[in-house]
Amino acid sequence: MKLHHFVSWVTGAAGGLGQAISHKLAEQGSHLILSDINHDALQKLSLKLSAYPVEIMNLPLDVSDTEAVWEGGRKIKERFGRVDILINNAGISPKGPNGSIPFQEIRIEDWNRVLAVNLNGPFNCSQVALEMMVENQRGRIVNICSQASRTYSPVTSAHYAASKSGLLGLSRKLAGEYGPLGIRVNVVVPGRVDTPMTQSVDKELSRQAALRTPLRRIGQPEEVANAVAFLVSDEASYVTGAVLDVTGGSLML
Ligand SMILES: NC(=O)c1ccc[n+]([C@@H]2O[C@H](COP(=O)([O-])OP(=O)(O)OC[C@H]3O[C@@H](n4cnc5c(N)ncnc54)[C@H](O)[C@@H]3O)[C@@H](O)[C@H]2O)c1
Image (cartoon, rainbow, N blue to C red; front, side, top):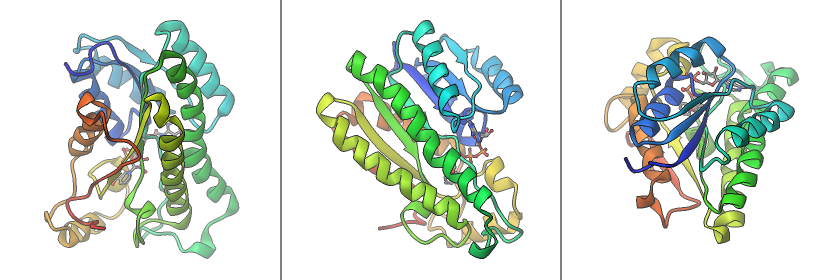
């Protein structure tokens, strides 16, 4: 129980990676705040997690809605008085029939929405969480980026790549600014992982990705959750501003 007495806030908790991360943190003994826009899926998840001896707070919200996130922060403060760990995991990746949407076909509304969820979302949640982390002098943030933030990705679209590259930059800035306060900020870069996000497109894309990957398969959500658990643990006490690639070797820089 490495995270006994910790309070962790997971966004996009009802999705593939979010569920695996939530299970892993609960297994480590952390209390959980679960946020997602999918209220039903959130209910189902918290029922499953009630098997762990931890407190669970359902906090349905849209991470791009600044007011809703600050209101959420007030509820967290009321219930737990603090948040020690924030996992900025909520994300969207609009896809075309062949995966990537051609740049000229991206409408400005779609561009704005992707940036709002994938980049403004972590901005909102980090501002709210950091206020409490600074007050409590303890904090660990993990931002879930993407290979598209580190290199050219043929299967994702321009708005997604831009948003995740922005998140990488934000992570570095926060790691530098909050390091002197002992607050650590790190990034996990998943390769292709078997979740609803990747299941929503042609299976052939995952098969091809597996063939291009040195470990010859796509990842499982639990494998990403294990990396997150390491970064928020005391074992990573000297790790901040780091990018941990969990890609089966498909990304080697
Ligand atoms: N699956 C992959 O292969 C892969 C690879 C690299 C990065 N990622 C990143 O990992 C994260 C999780 O992805 P996933 O594969 O679990 O996807 P997913 O679609 O299974 O889950 C995403 C979750 O985020 C929630 N969500 C969407 N918009 C939201 C909003 N505005 N506010 C709150 N919640 C919102 C969804 O309801 C969903 O439950 C994303 O940031 C994604 O970009 C995934």
